[in-house]
Image (cartoon, rainbow, N blue to C red; front, side):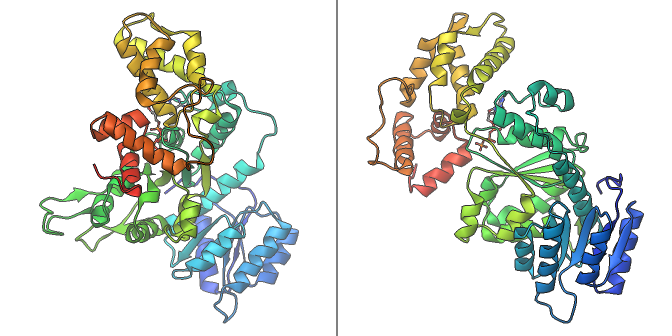
Length: 468
Ligand SMILES: Nc1ncnc2c1ncn2[C@@H]1O[C@H](COP(=O)(O)OP(=O)(O)OP(=O)(O)O)[C@@H](O)[C@H]1O
């Protein structure tokens, strides 16, 4: 589980009133190569911290007969006041998840639940130590693309946008840790590409990268899909089936469209993410898994938490780090780079070595709003190359696609309804209906033309009550 490379030189402080817990934590951490110091009260913890360097605090939530957890939260608050950058991991009891959530809000680095599993606890400790090292090393100087390419493998990701470069720097740094990462952003902004980059730049790169589209898995199939089943586990289970977690063991599991997960599957996912253990359906055997979790969504999980549609504890579990990808219209400077890269790839692929895109066409593309982001840009270029017999892709070659999809440059005459007459949702609904009519109800083509994945389109069809 993880590596046992020492990333700290200062000791880890263990604060727990139970002698046995202190002793077993100290032993576990010592075996993993860390120095420790243990105390039994919050006051002793604060006193020790005032006089010693410390790499991380592992603290219990209760120090007396009271079991409210208030003492733990108070200790955390005091530590944050004097040591704002020091990572603190809370040890909470199962069932007191709201306490863990309160602690995360106060700035805890992570929480482990009692009874803990040693691999999960060590993974949390190593991740928090590595991330703390990362945070303390924040640069002030802007990063250049050359610097990034010298340190990381981001070959597949085209961008020179300052916001993207900063974000890629963060991706490169957290890739080395086992921290769970949540990638957000509109459809087609490159979330999967970033997930892949996290894996590629991690110590897990030679192990599997397993993508699971949670939007496509029904609640009844969730366990069998994720944890596997043994023959006879249910009526249709004629063979043993390996689950996705097992397939990803040692590597990275990419949970795409995590905002689409129903309530019962959310609990099941939380359990395995918490303990790194699960049971194969139909067998009572517990399995332990060593995975790095990366999740993605184009929905706002914070809003979903507020509406009671997504568990807050699960959100904290999956987003130790959040990476938000800007929409393509927010980084139009990347459009020429992307366009040239896509044309180059096509030229190679189709053996049309001299295929290029004209400067005028690039400029024209830069003025478009790109609701389907980079995926849509790529599709347009592929389509234009398909219909163009010549070697130069020009404005006219794109115009046909644009007219077909009802898009036009922002600088051209304004085809949009007057401000205040339609909401974004109404526009989206109207556009989906228009595209459905145009493509005779062919969902794949509609998804393609709007720059959505099929899953994303189906979600919208359901949301707007459109049946096909
Ligand atoms: N920065 C980039 N450089 C080159 N290609 C990119 C970049 N970003 C995205 N792409 C390409 O655009 C397409 C869409 O990207 P990706 O599938 O990663 O988006 P996504 O955000 O995961 O979409 P969705 O939410 O619909 O699943 C892919 O073909 C990907 O290779």
